[in-house]
Picture 1 (cartoon, rainbow, N blue to C red):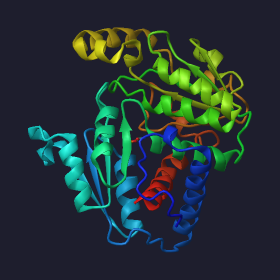
Picture 2 (picture 1 turned 30 degrees about the vertical axis):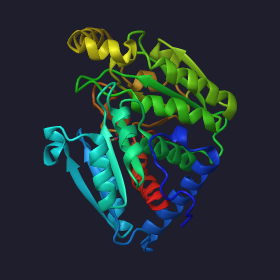
Picture 3 (picture 1 turned 60 degrees about the horizontal axis):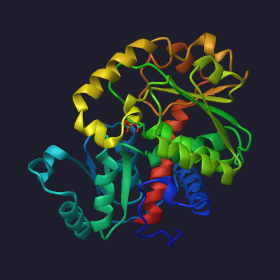
Amino acid sequence: MNSKFKGKHFLSCEDWNKEELDIVFDTSFDLKNKFKTGVPTVHLHYKTLFMIFFEQSTRTRNSMEAGMTQLGGHAHDLTEDKMQLSHGEIAKDTAIILSRMGHGIASRNCFYGVGNEYLNEMARHSSKPVMSLQDDIYHPFQGLADLMTIFEKFSNDPKGLKVTVSWAYADTHSKPLSVPQTQLLLFPRYGIDLTVAHPKEFPLSKNIIDKAQKNAEEGGGSIKFTDNMDEGFEGAHIVIPKNWGGFGRYGVQEYLDNEAECKKEMAENLAKYKSWICNDDRIKLADKNVKLMHALPADRGNEVTDEILDNEEISIVFDEAENRLHTAKAIMALTM
Ligand code: CP
């Protein structure tokens, strides 16, 4: 296992250059191949990962925990209520202590204006690598699995591939901005032509868009925006219909100071866009070989119809979900 990344944090794909990410992808494919053929990959024998979830998770929790087991180590599945965090113990103290007891810390904290700062505070004080399991800005493990899936299904060099990330209606909860923002930042670094479709009330964060434009210039990809879902789907090779909350409309401080009012306005805006669904009519606007991706969980019948999600000719969402395991194992094996 390549040792040059030992101790490196994984809080965002932005902190890893393309050459480094290429090693992560090579490692992911190698681990996937060995998983499929039953070859042991005991790179983290007796090592311990502490995972702290402030929110629910299926894919992230289980890819990390299963991944640690398959690498020969063990992951503690922790939540706020199991720890003294619930009595106010701060990120700094938590990070110092856990990093003395084990070999890595990973956390999901998606609270808007809080999560990314929390993870960075842990990273400043941890003597072991800190990994983001999703925050209010980034979901780096999702980005890796998405790109690995694109490499598998299309090409290792996806230059010119047309990918559309589209806001879609959902009524489950206000989903973070972190998945579309990670895709926006990452895909154009690999030459992908990205279209982002969203109603005007659901923008992504301006500083992320500015950074993504620079990434596109350097990586040979492109980014365009539309407020029309049909237009976004036209000619796309991949569509990613996914809800996100209206957080990007507010500055962080503005949101934190007026949270109740912002949430009320977000709910009112959401109700206007029930027609933003990936359905049969819309998928026909895309390329004839279009593929559907989604980080999951999908809000079936709102973000995307069952007919599209369950169509094995179109949907690659379960391959994408499986690749969460292989990419998680690559990052853990390389950094811990
Ligand atoms: N895509 C994803 O992060 O799924 P979970 O919320 O289930 O971890």
